[in-house]
Length: 335
Image (cartoon, rainbow, N blue to C red):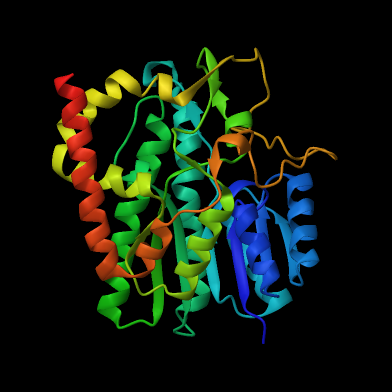
């Protein structure tokens, strides 16, 4: 019987690439997102790969909508085997330029959306005592950067929430598993539609990876959800190791470099559409797909992915990479 996978934020970016991957596995894929055009494109991609798709327009900030979507998903495809939380939104701006309503909205989508998805998934999985939940996180959930206070706060909250739920499941002896995938900067459409008050066009902090790299990691985590978390990308390993040992130095380093590294040389468009309050990929012809505008700068592979699947070798590799980062940052500081 084909596995049943639910993916939030499935209309674009990492969610879209993950949906395509499971489509090629001939899975039954329930797609949750707000934008009708993006959802339609994702459904076509899944079916083109040999899978079956059920697109359900859903705002994950609304728990009743997520709950109803889970019911509809099981009524169509049967028991949910894997639930993958990806959906998020953000604001690129200094904290003092973000309104309370905007900060709340980011938190409701990017953090509470994961809470709602996890609640809906557990309600289905715990009575059957099986299933896997994959939280798609970020290196920014353990090492925050400037200009993304709302997003970083949400990602930090996901880490704490997931850790608590994982402990409870272990206490209960449950066979439901929850794991977390910490991603690097990814070339997704968010940088074209995120609400931004930066003077120049926003970009992912290099090095940038293609969404298919993230999707392969998410799928592997879904297949092997016993691990607490997976780190994806050399930059994620370097960031998290450096955060462990030289967090105060990183504060100063990012204070100097974090503004320019998140902006291109291109001046920002005035009054460009953003997806904070309403989807940008809703109208016909507005499907953005998985990729953003940085294909020429993005890596399609990550050798570190192999290490993430082999913990012993990965630990050695992470240590070596961390030592290299510490040495490089010390050299820059002296310079």
